[in-house]
Length: 410
Image (tube, rainbow, N blue to C red; front, side, top):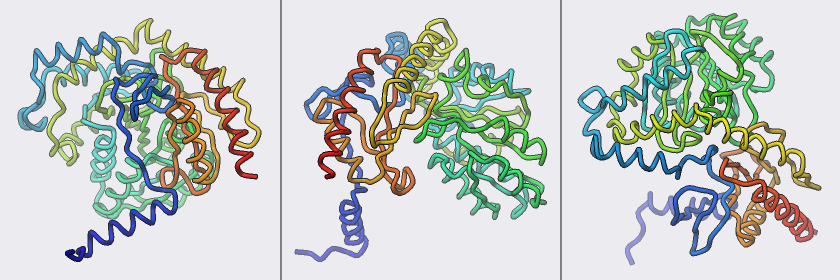
């Protein structure tokens, strides 16, 4: 047998180590459309794990719009936006997205990208290039999403920017850090809704700091767009913020139910990113049919139907917070569809997820490095397509499983 070459041997050894540490991830295949019912491993499971918060991913109107978009524009864009891939569908979508934030960002303009990851890399690395090398400071919330973390790291490496992590629950500590910062360009980077805890960033306090010390505030509202605010416009609407300093990132594959993401900011910042945002410049544009379908999604989000879906979602959240009482597990205080249950060890989280799977529920265990060590959890998420009965049945099942895991731990 041929001896394994070094890199392959390293990969297999380290994968085995991940398995021993209970950190190896498993890829599972769903055979149905994204919804509250799934088919995995030839079994139907009730899903409380997707980010389809408004239940639009399988909405008949969006299915029809995507098919119509494909008929009009085909299935591919053919090139990057700056070559020939920018369709009228992309243009109309960007104008509509900008209108959603126009009350909060003066001279708002939007830029549509393929993914939220790409949007964050583009925005952070592009904006930091406004400063001369070594003349930028980035302040990043410790619990930010991986795409923000990677954008910050890349910007720091490319432009020799200093990077400081801060606790988003202590904005006064961040203010103290700014007092000694003399660099001409400063950027605060934060999630709007923290994806693993479900809590909101103190965006009002962060904006005050940005205004006091002449900084920009980048808010990734991946889990707030479509959900927060009366019209579903996101955290800026909910908190009634207005500033030219805000750079807003929204994701369109979660509550919007389709795919892609966008950056919304003052027109001058967006024009700069078109010129210098390398991930945007050198990526093939998304299929125009996706943009066409998203126009229908935005209509639903802002409509009476969207308001009804958000109202039902908030009812689910209220019932969970009131009726889900644990003996040993930790429930977080969250006003969003993200409702984590913290179990601590990887073993406990994996056992609970396994017992849930046996009971017919799909709620994967979330473990480090996605969350801090000793905070492994079940990340329960709600969709507007979940009924109150669905939720109450889950609550009963979770209470039973908590007791089972307590007995097994004895």
